[in-house]
Image (tube, rainbow over all chains, first blue to last red; front, top):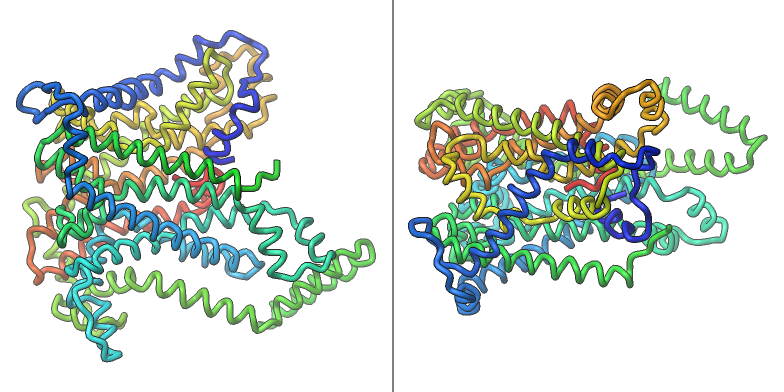
Length: 310
Length: 311
């Protein structure tokens, strides 16, 4: 079961150790010691601190100065921030659906008892391991550059290309393509899900005279919805935090004309290039709220389309 | 189809036919398989998959081939055929920055090793507690652990950076490795909890009757049995740490402390369009370890994301 499934059902079942010795607190806390330390010092502590910092002006040079909600008011009027939100939404809501649709389509094709499954699976999976590396971003910069691979290939067909990355109207698309390119990871998850659909259901549908497409849309797809949901939630959360590729392709500034200025990239620039730490902390909390809202919407909407067979 | 294949499939069919007498369902399955083999549709599918696969891997293949070409040819030749092999990109790229590339490879290796050891030890300990022990507030701690998997790093990075820089740890590997030693990669804790739940509890009970305490049950019963989960963790940690850019960018600013991703970035910023050859060569070098891990650890990677749903 996935982490999401676990969270969904945790209220309904008892998470117990099942051990006969009831008081194992001492041993448990010993085993959990590193995790507790990490949770407090690396995660919760800094989270609380960043919440406080979001109400301050802090440049690392002098102590944080409390300024109330000034940072958030500043965010309301910050056009670069609004633009970066637009860029990020565009990236998330275009690339994730395409990526998942491709992943699902290929998983379905691969699942039909085709020979060479593991070979194809490896070929499609490899890009998701490479996709977040700086090396691939470097490659992308050449491939979609003015004299890059894409334009040389287009030249064979007599089409004159352009600098796809230097043109603000297409720069973001190259990053969307890069994210779609990494569809292999969700594909493997879909494949695992397809494997778990009992043959019995399909045979029964066949006996009842269901056509192939009916079997897919009425049996396979509904049974797969929890996995689609899981992939959707995780890929959206993941895509909201994309950073490396936009950083490398734009040389760190989100250009041209802020067209690849992801929210996280802008946050980095405010916090770690301009040392506007209070503002960066406010931006980070806002990001958490945005991600939280979209995850909550996802969970709420899942009631209407996700089918749990348990 | 080769001769042997024909023979084996004929044998399979014979078996299927003989089973047919017992179970009528087998006939349907056998017929299905025979149809699947003969259908031209299957060939079409293979063709489609091969074309898609080639299209996906083409840029990477071209990167490798281009790294063996003189730079001016990179911008002219979109093909994969090498006319004259040119290794100078590799020797040039190796020494372009102030330190040789081996320094960056070593730095990345140190960070990766530290993170792997940290994750293996701390996450397996936490996972044992969550999977096998009863303790106060367990349910809530577990919920908190699962929630942290989805927490964006940005919401903790500013104070964390301030803390580590005040401790004087910028330009050391501590800020990169310490969080792993403290089990903050909750994803792996979850992966291991799932795995330990699948280990029969009777083994623990037997050891307990023999007088083993939890440390011994953990070290001598559970750990040896969860090697596959540990392998998955090690492999994912390797790849994610090797590729990680954001936190390394924050904490490593001195060129001699650079890891591979930072070196590539510096390389790209420092050079003009004439050095794409060496830049490509070092990009290939940076991808080789990932490719090797993928090649030898695929089984664990696929198992890992299939059972937990990946990151």
